[in-house]
Amino acid sequence: MESARIERLLDAYFEGNTTLAEEGTLRDYFTKGNVAAHLESYTPIFQGFVQAKEEVSVKEVTLPESGFRIKGWWYSIAATFLVAVTVGSIVFSNSGLTDEEQEALAAIKETKEAMMLLSSNLNKGTENVVFLNEFTKGSSNIKYINQFTETKNRILK
Image 1 (cartoon, one colour):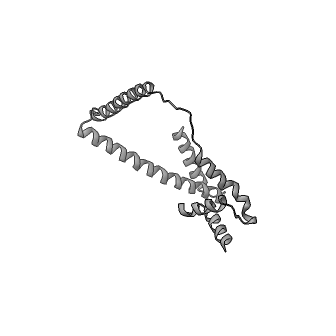
Image 2 (image 1 turned 30 degrees about the vertical axis):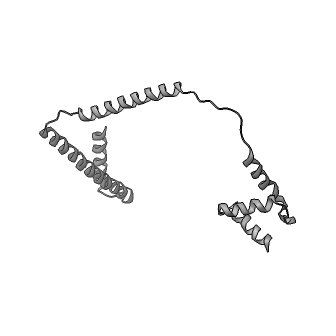
Image 3 (image 1 turned 180 degrees about the horizontal axis):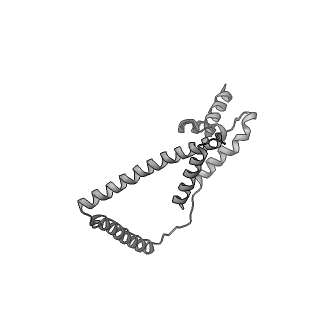
C-alpha cells in the first residue's frame, strides 16, 4: 500500500503537482532506507537533493559599486533629454496652416478618394469591355472598342 502511495506521489512530483509536504514525504522515504526494489532507481535523485541542500559556498563575492552608478546616472540624463526633446517637438510642432488651408487639404483628400473610386469602377468596366471584345469577335462594334482602347493607351502614356 505504501509503494502505491509513493508511486502516485512520484507521478505528481514529476508533473509538478505536489505540495512541499508531499515532497518532504518523498525525500524522507527515499533517504531513510526501506525503499521498494522497483523504486530504488529514484533514490539517488532525492539523496542528491538532500546533499545539495547541505552545500555551502565559502567563496566571497564582491560587486563593483562605482562603475554602475556612473552609467545609471548618464542613462537617466540621456533618457530625460530624449523625453524633453520628444515632448518639445510635439508641443511646438505647429504646422502653420490656417483653418482654411486645413479645410482645403481635407477637400483635396476627399476628392482624391472619390477619383480613386471612379477609377476603380472604370477599370472594372474596361475589363468587361475587353471580355466582350474577345467574346464577340467579328461584330460591328469592334471598331468602337478598338478606338476606345487606342485612346485609352494614348492618354495613359
